Length: 72
Image 1 (cartoon, one colour):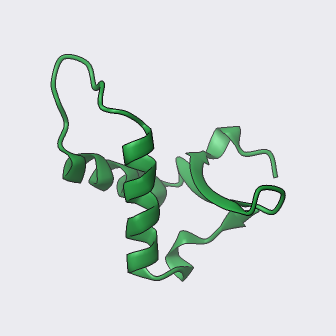
Image 2: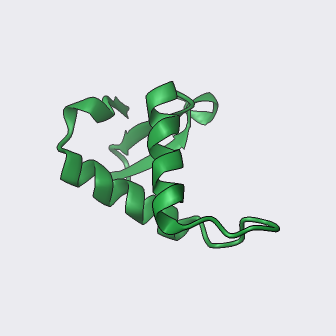
């Protein structure tokens, strides 16, 4: 189920984004991207709708995923 990210607290959203960025690893190709920049990029992707915040009832987890990959 998609969770409207605008309806959760800023602190909770920040924690979800930080956890997601830390899980994604650190290999960004030829140039390094700071942790803060990566968090900003994830927030921009949420704003644009290219990624969504998803709750899995089966696993009782929250995750960010590409909107195109989400299969309700």
